[in-house]
Image (cartoon, rainbow, N blue to C red):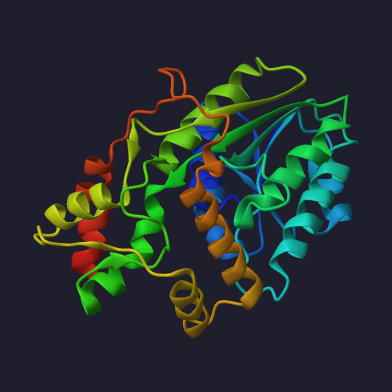
Length: 297
């Protein structure tokens, strides 16, 4: 049996679907039964509960061979770093029992920045927490910046005619990836169970992109060839996030993450190779997802 955490999200849902299509028994974890119904209709078993609840996780993981583990976003919490730590600790503790032998986690580039990583700091905590669990084989997928993050900019594009929001320099190259490609890598490794000990693998998209390039590509897809990337200051970005209702600890974490992008430390240790480059391009995302969402919004 496979257990998928965050099963209503971008990667978890696709991993669950791929495993079900491969004929595997799958249990999917989520907080909202309605958001898991599509997977239940396809043959999954739903487990409704919180990833901060160690006892619930122990029961759900019991009898599983492998788990896809992640820390879902939680925009309502007043203590985002604490939420990440609690979830990571509950996941790791629950996986010590129940017979699970293999775990694939959704981590991130920058997970080595356990002190100053912003929104990825908790993923570094999770990786560290797994290191002492010698009975588990754990593969951390250190993914690049999600293409899907730009869907949140559609309102800004329509209202202000700019792409922006993240205080990241427009000429800063960065690994960016489609979440379907992350799910494909995760599924392949979960089916093969071909990893031992503690390891990580980068999942980096087809090539590094700058935010200026992203604005040009997305603008072309929606008929706005002059769409610019506008780099907000850290203060402006934080204030904008707070005005949108984001909690201060999460806004601070996003700003710190962007600082690490700008100073280059987020990508330390990453070297692009054919093995960690994935196929879906920004142009494909722009045509298939961004443009339809823009037109529908």
